[in-house]
Image 1: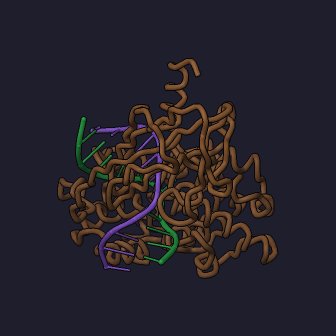
Image 2 (image 1 turned 135 degrees about the vertical axis):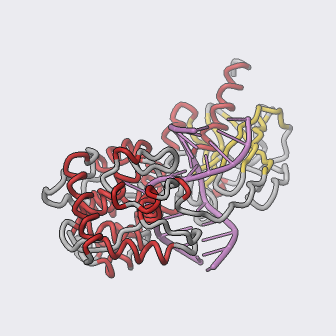
Length: 353
DNA sequence: TAGCCGTGGTT
DNA sequence: TAACCAAGGCT
């Protein structure tokens, strides 16, 4: 390691010793590594997700399933419902697959980056993070925080995503052999609290003396990113069908949008286009209001259609289930449908059922 | 490789 | 308000 890199790593670790955030899944700086199960669970939950959003889910999961064996033994539907609201539901499917793979092979997580990388749901980032944080292995841990810190530190001009190769090489250069987990978490804390996307607090930064972007007076210019395409707007309908204080819910296909989650029946809207307007039965339907919901690649206006006859002619039993209205919270609806269900319940309140 | 996949907070 | 974006992975 060259002198500048050693300087950077030393300053950063000293800063972390004083300013590390206290988080439920984290051990204090310099202390023994935490339970790999908790490290892994937190890292998966934190993929593209803020610390604030994760905290309650982490507490819920670790209370309900204290070990990886407990999680491996859980029912699919239980875990999907517990994940409801956190988003990116493929993570929950992979979480279960990973827990079961680990349980099958003796109940312990592998302690090397290469072996971790083979588990479902662990990509380059997560495998490196778990290897470093849970097992003290030197690994090059690069998430969006690290990308930002490193791009500024070295004033890397190459726009993302292509510039990742150069950023990764630079991160490798400054990563020390010792305290690998602390170093990775220090970089992420720095990115989250000091080297922020907008309005970085360079005057508080332990690396400002080494930072090329700061010296040039334009740290916020980095990392350079390719422009993003505009999000299309889509229209869709969801259907609120109630009988005997129960509402008709379906389970979405295992893959794709909101895959594997319980949902209200809908008319087939997607990122590619509007829905057909057609529901699972013929109607008649009454307008029940609309909600707007933003997904990664499009914005959806979801209009709720209320079934307005007292008797449902027929619904195929294997296509869904009648779910008690007073236990709707337990259904684990993703946020889009939870919003729509609120509309449905409100409409019933207005008509006094 | 680039498109797909949620959600909620910030500006 | 609308755009941006956060401890990414999969195909």
